[in-house]
Length: 150
Image (cartoon, rainbow, N blue to C red):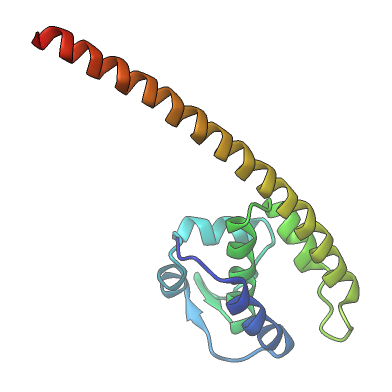
């Protein structure tokens, strides 16, 4: 999956959400450009996260839908559930100040950052314990090899 930086997403999202463009991309190109499967795109559509234009059986993705997918991928990369991502995106109002959307996104981001920092601390502790155990095992192995060589 293609990693999307938060800076890229924020820089592109406001323009893309503001005005729809006739610059459409087919589902295969969309999947390739973002490193996701066709099934993933259809799943996001079924969940109401993206709404491609339909021409017969062909799905066409506007600049707005590409920006939404970037936000979805960013949210998933930092650990938000699809439900949380949808909640934040659904607050977008093209004619408003989006203060509520920004506040909710900020609050959810603060909580997620705290969760990630706790997880990092737990990982750091687990790594330290594993290294310590490996040192004990390495020392025991070296001692046994010396004894069997003698």
